[in-house]
Image (cartoon, helix red, strand yellow):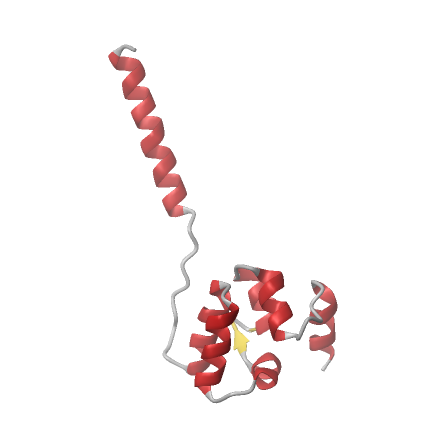
Length: 110
C-alpha cells in the first residue's frame, strides 16, 4: 500500500469517527427541578432508574404521567420524541397500554 492510499484511509477513519461522535444526542437540563430530572431519566431508557426517580421525587406514577411536562410535551410524547427504549418505557408508564399514538390521543383528551 502506498503512502497516498494510507493517508486517504486514515483521513476517512478520522472523519467517520468525528461524524459518529457529533451524532450523539445530549440532554442538558435547563434547571434543577424534580420534574426536569424525571424528564432526563425518562429519556435515558431505563425503567429501573425511572421507577427509582419517581419514587425519590415523592410523586405518584399517575401524577407524573398526567402532569409532568418536558419541553411542553407530556412525558409519553417526550419519550417518543427524545427517548431510548420508547415502547418499553411507555409501557412501564402506562401499565402496558402503550401502542404508539393510541395512548397519546387518550392522554391529550383528558
